[in-house]
Amino acid sequence: MDKVFSDKINLLKALAITLVVSGHLEFRMFDMFPPYSFQLSLFFFISGMLFKDKYLDNVVEFIRRRIKSLLVLYFLYSAFYAIVTIVIARLTGKFWGMELSFKNFFITPFLNGHQFDLSCPMWFVTQLFMTMIMFLFFQRQLRGQKEWVKAGIYTLMGFAAIPLSKIFELNPVSLIAIRIMFSLFFVYLGHLYTHKIHGNYNIFTPKILGAVICLQAILWHFNRDFDPTHGIGLSFVLVWARFDSQIIVPVLTSLTGIWFSLFFINVTYDYLKSIKFIKLVGENTYHIMANHLFVMYIITAVIFYIKGIPFSERNEHNIYWIFNPVQNTYLYFVLTMILTTYIGVGLKFIKSKIPVIKNL
Image (cartoon, rainbow, N blue to C red; front, side, top):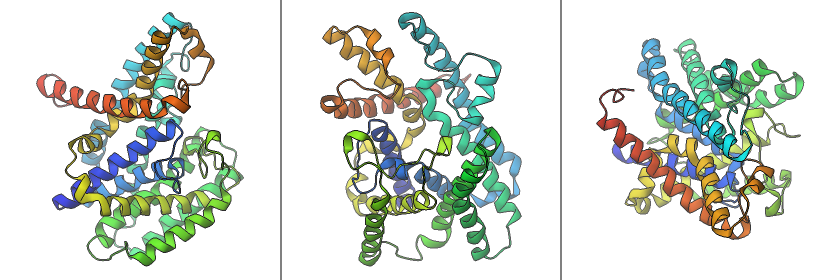
């Protein structure tokens, strides 16, 4: 993988996590391509871009690396947020999460990842772990098959996931299966893009741009929320397999959003590549995902203290609530991106200096 392509992937990761944070603050970075409509699909796409075929012959090493890169840090963060949640409960009288138990600490992360409200965006980490293990399995089983056969199988899974979520009763097992089917399609597309499309075909032509914009304009007819104060339209909630009444729109709007993200990075690369902070954002997506709700919570506490507002008011709202969003949304966004990025930088520095945890 050449350096330019590697740098573009890092910028794509920075864009994806920025869309996650802006989505939780309920504003659109790209008005026609709202974040809840594609940003998680974009993360799966990026994971497919980074998948190395050498692991097809070394399953144990692949699983070991995924445990090390995804699960070890996940459970360290879970332990941290268990402590934080207990402390906040004693200070404010509200416990932000499920009751503490063996199941909720070790099993719930793989079911829905919402055991602690402050760290609930990390549900994606365990979902990614399961999805990538299944992708490795399918790639091994499909090795030697023509590409159109692979594409057909993954496409069928991606488009079938939503109808199946409406046919079968959703329980922990079926929910995991639906999410994996949906996610595998975009992991495969990322892998296909890296190995078959990038460098061989130009998919960023004016005609394709026009086609994507026209398709997105049609998809907007399925949008629920035309008033920005009501939230973000064309959205779906993958963690709970909530697709409302849609059947194929979530897949299509994921595809248009991913294409537009690739297009955006492609046309802005020469400018963005020189911005050090954006590079750091791309390198610290895990820490940003893990900590941004907690940082927003702290920002609210500071604002309440400055304004003399009883903090008990915070307990009346959900974990995504921020104080006076009309005035403060962009302040929250900027501070959260800066603080969580440098939390990641700081933790990596500490890790590099402590021999005991250096190899974790």
